[in-house]
Image 1 (tube, helix red, strand yellow):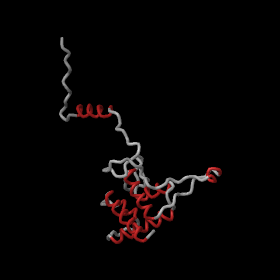
Image 2 (cartoon, rainbow, N blue to C red):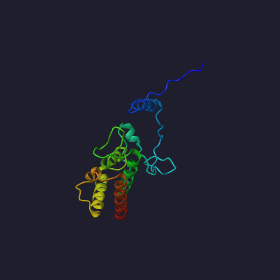
Image 3 (tube, one colour):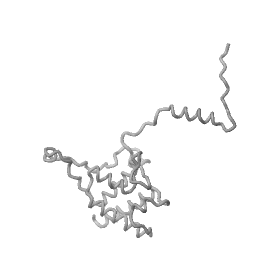
Image 4 (cartoon, rainbow, N blue to C red):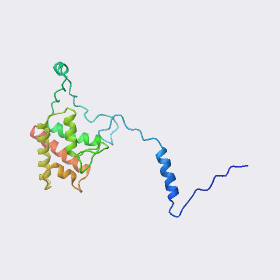
Length: 175
C-alpha cells in the first residue's frame, strides 16, 4: 500500500508555508567566510587589507620589556589608503563607530588602522584634515568627516571617493 503524504497546510495568509520555509532556511549551514577578505569585492586575488605595508615587528628591546612594537611608519596618504581598504574589508556602518558585525564608520576605520600598528595619531589627524579639505572643496558644509559619514544621503562609494581624493591630495602635497 503506498504511503500518502498529507497535503501542505495552507492558510489564507500562507503563514504555515512561510514558517516551514523559514525553518528550512535556518537548518542550512552558515555560508563559509573567506579566511582573508578581499580588498576589492570585484577582484580575484585574496589579499589582506594591509597588503604591501609591513606589519609592525617587535625589536629585541620590545620583547625584553614586553611592550608592543612601535607603529609601522606611514605617510598621511598611506593612512588614507589603508582606511579605505579597511572599510572595504570590515564593512561600513553609519551612526556608530562600529557595530556587532564588525562594520566600522570612517572614524572607526581610522582607529582600526592605528590599532593594528600602522602609523600614529598625528597621521590620522592630518588625514582627517585632508578629508575635510576635500569635503569643503566639494561643497559639503559639514563640521567633521564623521558628520559626512553619518549623513543620510552618504553611501559607501561616497566615502571611498572622498578618501581617494584626500589620498591623492596628500600625495600631491608630499605628506
